[in-house]
Length: 410
Image: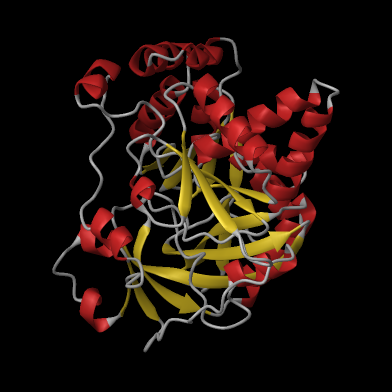
């Protein structure tokens, strides 16, 4: 490694396309959670990093487990693990708030940030009482969920009750048992003894999805970029085409939450811009990179460069993209959504031409995860954690989002 530079190491599933990328050393993640935890620990000990960047929610959960286990020990290695995880993600409370949507909304409201009206639902009877005082459409949200999987937009009482039952069942004991069988991983059985995640009822905001991505260190925002979604891959899915916007309210909200939670690393904040008032309403926080973290239009938006400098590295000169307009078609998401999309020509197409291996690997969507471990073995695919991508960085960190997780929301 050149002085002042950085090395990149990735802990990834066996069939992950990053294994084909030059300049990245890779470690096999393993099939079970126990194997994944050992792989992350081994990689961090082999080449102690300055920063660990979790690329999806499962990676965040693995780091949370490592942090909790380290707190129970009093060894030098445990103290190093605690320090590394907290300097990479933030204070311990940040790990909890990032996945507890209901508590995060309450915190944001106390900070003076605009949020939709949100109430935690205890049971089906509680839901029915709440529906008597609410106007449809409404949104049901499950804590500890991501990528729209734990969200139901409901338009009447019947849909609301059905959505509540589905969300409750998806995180209950039966679901934990099914997951342990599907994944052949006994760690999933922990769900049999844990309290089910909270479900909240939220007022639906008619408007445009938006995101503020930032790089931060110990509660201070270093750089960021705000965008709104132009096209998405589904009704509640991630953006495939974005438009750069200037929203002081979104910028202020990000700074308040980053400071309040003491966050570090890459963070994405999701908003909905109200169609009537143009006011952004904060709805969710992702304590990981979102798909725009690599975009650098100027020094204030260069998240990778600013974080690298803050960590003491001298990053290579980054060539800022020649964006002819404020609209960007994201690669490879817009190609996957519609290969004939007008935005591939009318907007700036965000193709990493300098990395042909990446382009070749993601011209087509990766095959879906096998629905059963036996089928996965037959296909020689690693189960069950694809896509999981935890990337320890030596000296400093740069990251092009999570190419294995196109469902990461904008």
